[in-house]
Image (cartoon, rainbow over all chains, first blue to last red; front, side, top):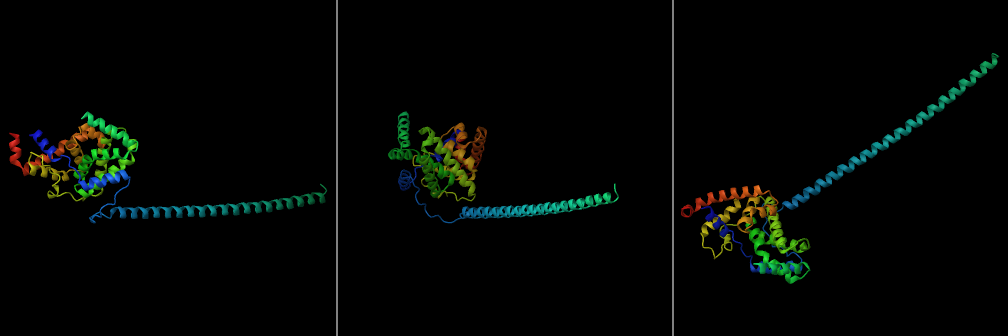
Amino acid sequence: MSEDFESELRAALRPVEPSAEFSRKLLANVTAGEAAPRKPRKLGPGAGRPLVWWFTASLAACLIMAVGIQQHQQQQRLRQTGLEARREVEQALRLTSQKLNLAFEAIKSQSTATDEKSGV
Amino acid sequence: MNEASDLLDAEFARARSGERTALTALVQAHQRSVYSLALRMLGTRDLAEDLTQEVFMQMSANLRGIASNRHLGFWLHQVTSHRAIDQLRRRSRLPMASLEDGAEFFSAEDQTDPLLQRHLRALLAHLSPPARAVLLLRYQEDLDPMDIARTLDMPINTVKSHLKRSLEIMRAESTRISPERCEDRST
């Protein structure tokens, strides 16, 4: 039974020849190294899927790029703001230091004058 | 058989060196196998012709990467099966050949039950794409399970399991359409 069934299956699945017209076109195209124009086929369900897929993929790629560019610009802005703040703090510290030096000098000269007057 | 094989090996060597007549001979030698596999995997002549052409164009472009005519046979089975499985997966609602569409599927040499054979071919459409490829490589191309496993890049046990399960399904379904035939043969 099993062998008979397998024989039936072998007979059912015996290889078939392609049509002579297709065979001729195939040989011509393969030896010429170029694909033959395909027959127009009726649009069925799923026929437009590759196009939809490409459109969706392109849209997704554009969105990812836009988000990436925006994030990069925001990071640049934050970095710029940080650098400006650092410069301002450094400037403020420099001015404070100068003022303290002046105050120290004034106190020091006043103290020397007082000592001279008192004859120490 | 050996002479034919030697002849094809010589044609293969000449085709690799760029001789067009040898390339033609190679295509003629292998087109029946590729077309039949594509037709029974995809179910319609249009799709089978497109796939056959794509496979041979790819072969023509990659001939230098193929070692021998025997390797070419393996390569063609592999590329055709994988491409067909990919197509079937992409288009889950692919139209299948009707029973009437099988005029050229039927060979005049058949001494067996043509109704049962048509039914068996139609049952192929109910198998998953990998199971269909396994069954076709086994019963159409006459490859052994180890070669099928290599061709489809599949573990040998998976190949055997596909074969066993597909045969069970097809035998059960064919008993429904032709019980008396199956009974005759079982006795």
